[in-house]
Image 1 (cartoon, helix red, strand yellow):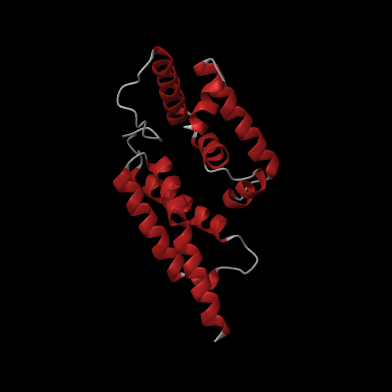
Image 2 (cartoon, rainbow, N blue to C red):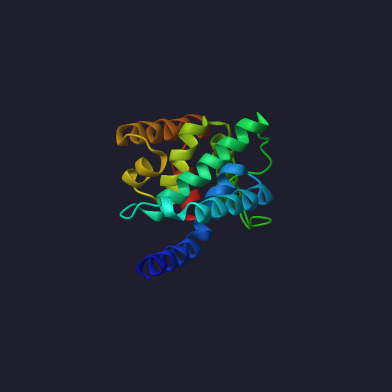
Length: 176
């Protein structure tokens, strides 16, 4: 009886995490349909292996790990994943002013830079700067020492500043 209650609670929490996992998968895959497939596979795997979830572990970290592992497995099987779309969809069709146009161009430069940076840096940057996870949460989700998380984030940010010329573009993306 207690096991069934815990299982129901885990399934309910998994349902609440679905939008987060979709966003993460979209940023990994750069394609809406591939991201949907990835999340579906991750949830299928999680439900099949719910008995392997260890109490006291963060469920979101466990799910990030499943999504990430499935993505890497698929990528390795396909050898090369084509970059089809940027990480974020920029919703404004036409900016109203030259200031908005400049912000949009800055955002597009940041997204292109993110798409071209090494995956290890991009994952850390996505989880911290876009998903809002703490360094410790990223450390757990990616199974990395916290020092590695810190250095990869610093390197990712340095790449953006070097290639885009302005760190404020990253902050604009975060607000947008």
